[in-house]
Length: 293
Image (cartoon, rainbow, N blue to C red; front, side, top):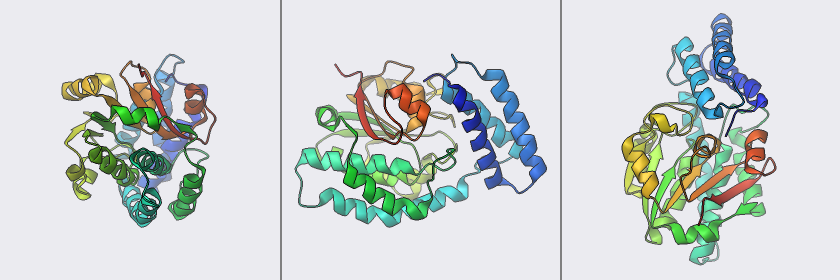
């Protein structure tokens, strides 16, 4: 996805948000904003990939703050909130003993709803105390874009690119169904801390490795999957996969610039620009399959 003019102020809003997570020093926050403005000014272009510019901005932010993980505490809180709602999600998924098709659809729905956990997006309230109510409301509504029936026949060798902490606990519900249906899963997490995204630290903490066949990383702390920074092993896995499941907006922003496929984009359209690029409205629950023969 290419950069939109609206990306600039949303990105700087997030820089301010995470700076305040890191420090109370207003001078340091001002310095951080100024330095990040310089990065935006240098790299902003209608032809630039939005997540690539975002990566440069966030790396500069972390560098000036001298903080390699401003969201460390926030990620713990997100995981705690997710764990509280997880039993509710499991109950809804398995209610009335659904067949495999419906079971997969419900698990995907729960997983996409958990993409709600994305703190710092301008104009989006992801407060944890509202998550259970939001989860139940979204679950009742269902998927606004539902390509899960097509996905069902592509689960033999899945590359599953994770997004946020908290959300990953709901992804594990999808892993269970994929494994039940005989599929293999390669889970991909960030190569280092960036925003609230999952890293190997969370994989270890929640024993996520026991749910999948293999764990790979994106090779760096980039926003999304920057192909130029991705390990050869990851690129091969994506090329060989029967299905790539891409969670969240940042992964969409990067992968939509390439021709991997089939790719299932599973996300909430929290951002107006991402929604428009997908040809959808803002605020939808999406499981959209593209590059499908």
